[in-house]
Image (cartoon, rainbow, N blue to C red):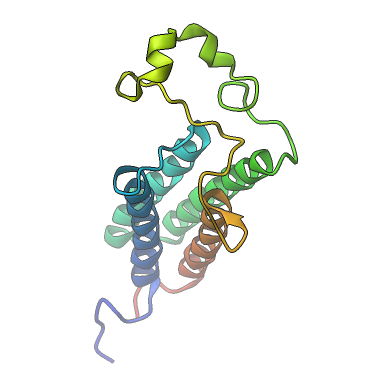
Length: 164
């Protein structure tokens, strides 16, 4: 059988999983810059594992080793954990960081004019408020579910042979 990029193999699955992270990261930027939904601190935390997974995916396309795929899975499981934590903060299941939840610990260090001026970094978005929801799930919840699905693809990549 002639091997193509679309032949199911480790390299293809790694590219698919990394591409999923790229789509989710672009969607987050779209919600922010096109939709006008500023991210809270925990939303920003969830972007980093996607960026790491994209970098791991670039490595994995060149070096399709099982350990690379396992690193990608670890990035997505980390992100799913952050998303679950964020969902719990949004739903009042547990307390969130003081800097972006109820107490607003970092707010005291800011000038009133800066708090009211979005261009100066004001308009802080609280982590314990749901800014967007679909079918009863927040953006953090949807990200967590997507990360679990992407982790499954990374794990499938690790179990496959490197080439067809």
